[in-house]
Image (cartoon, rainbow, N blue to C red; front, side, top):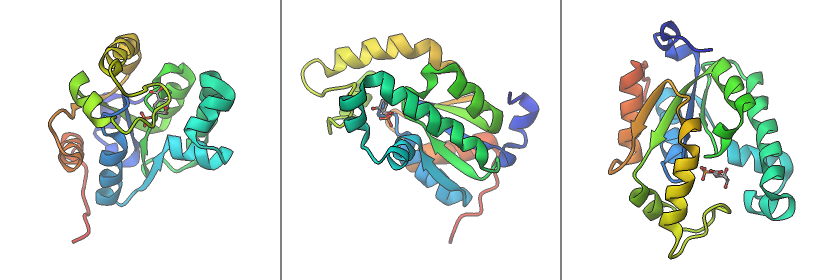
Length: 186
Ligand code: S3P
């Protein structure tokens, strides 16, 4: 478990972005990884690589439970990397499993990204998420899922509100907040 002391040596821990769909984990994570010269891993993409199936296809063929099982395998596989070398963007539901969070906390600092429901609805218009079909009821669905998930998202070391912010601003806030040494490419 990461302590206050560990936060002072954030450079030797992975940075793990959690948060609801549409809070910008992937976009901010890619920028963070580039600026910190770390490897970027998106757990959804890792699941897709490990299974050879898209997230939507897994939901269709195996249901949410089937997806969570595969997602857990992907999350636990991150323990094999040297801590401090990764920026990880998690799927929004990774927090639902205590085992996932125990594992992520064993090698990383958990940074929760948040956004207002209105902003989330705006950002997820593409309609690719199996749990959020876009359309008239999208906002209601977002609000009820957010309420359901609230207790799970409370497991974090830092939180950053991304509403009205560009991903590069979010990445900057994280780097500054943790006092990370940034060896940005010029
Ligand atoms: C999910 C979030 C998605 C993806 C899957 C389920 C969730 O990831 O893992 O559709 O349960 O919140 P993003 O948060 O990257 O959209």
